[in-house]
Length: 428
Image (cartoon, rainbow, N blue to C red; front, side):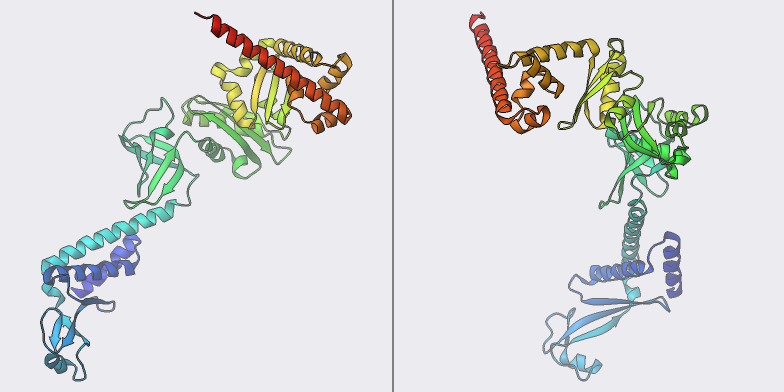
């Protein structure tokens, strides 16, 4: 029987990949638990396992006392000296117990403890296996659908695809294969929780890495990605090798590579954009297929005005603003699209507002306009130092212009307030 126990420990350790010491510790705990169930929780015992024979030894420790009041935990000095002639009151003596006397209780407790230890060890192994796999794509089988999301069988464990990480209108059924991105791996008491995603922008990036060898080997890089899952995406690519066309590499022969990804994403449109370190050129590329006439950048606020021909406005903005919204995410700047006619009118209105500043004539207005000040409001919000640097005006002139612009804006604000108050007074 002892040898059978040793073989069982060796087999479970080998087959399940569980540390042998964990199993031995579990058996010791089980025997200790069974003994205390039989004799009570006050029992002071020690359990030892001999690896060479597979034998379990159980020792009960009792305190040596002059007068015994609790036979379960105490032994008389007279009895104690029969075992150890040199013992004294207060010493602890160990008595070997027959482990087989625990019978069914010991076996049942051992089974429960070992099973729990095995589960804990398997959970730890699964967590260790998956904790460094965040960012990978994984394949699984839809196990079931519940309120937490889609439960995916990964073989050794399960993962969850929460509703928030599911693409709208994508429907999966039990037994269907599913491919997803490992978003996070959390350690929990009931086992590791593996969270999947099909909406994360990095899922698209990982799909391209798997499909395009030039991305996998680092020749082509994806430098930005913006997604509206299930509808449309934009990725910005660049090549480290001047002989390799990054867009062509991602598209593939007759569009084969990108079509494989579109198929995986169930028809999501993908725009592949050449990346540029020049933010204006990058934005122009990102707004394709619309044509761009000019771009006015504001580095301080990370915003840009993009001017397009009147007949290109709807193309630049896209359906429900999608094209400009994705372009803005891709570039990382706020993009305001205007038609040439609207821009010309705003230029004219801004130039006229400059002329309304007291003391500003056509020459000064032109100087301000050429320096990038397109309205009286911008002059009023400027600092003396910035205005001097941009226009070359001397300090006194710059300060007086700012003061005059602020007075003008104050008058306009007062007029607006008076008009509002009058309207409220006359309203029934």
